[in-house]
Image (cartoon, rainbow, N blue to C red; front, top):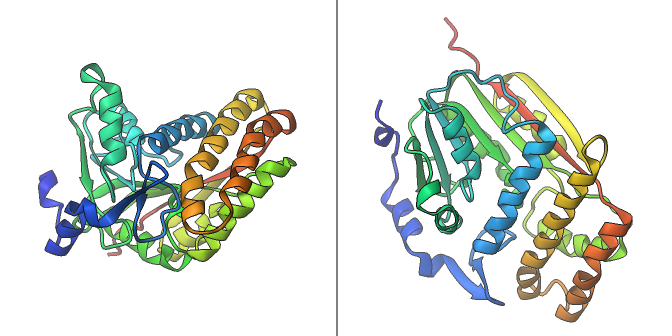
Length: 306
């Protein structure tokens, strides 16, 4: 089946994807989603942070995935952001068609610019704009491996079952679904905990998980998957603690900086108080340290019953 036979976008979806002036606004020099529950800007700076987080996860989890994937023919990444995971999977499996979709192409466009002519995405990768909170624009059983990570930044708790159902629908029997999510980072830093408290207000406002990691197995099983397994790692401890600390602190500080215009616009905190905490954040984290638990969970879609 050809790649483009998988796509089944409605005219409404196309209008939504194409009308960027209706979906985005600028505040504090940052590009912010007008509607929905995405709590970070969608711009080049946030894309840089997500790429850093990719390398942090790859280091801590020992690779780009944990599911026993062998020779997949088709791979899907849900809400793929900058596409860095897709690019590496396309390089690892050159005979597979790798597809990524996201509500906005801006992180992907920025990634392509950074790579330049000599580092373009592999020919076996395809990107399209689509909203993960709506029915996926693919036919049933289109993919051998369906992947998503850090959905909790925009996916309301009540909508997890529907999104997992879509992931299961587009995965072929015998194929795997894998999820990666975190818990709240922990540090004795007063400045850091103040900033986390502000972000928690936004999570609660939109009905988002305050750390979805512990809930992944439950969602995979509710979606009807078998052979469900998980691996939980605590970053900032163990053999690679020093390197992980450096990466985590850079990630968390950048995340707090990127979140600032969203928090101010939402009226969650006074700008001077947030800025004062930001000024202390990196120094306190460097001195006091931080730990951050991530969970990777996967399961297999059952084979068709005879």
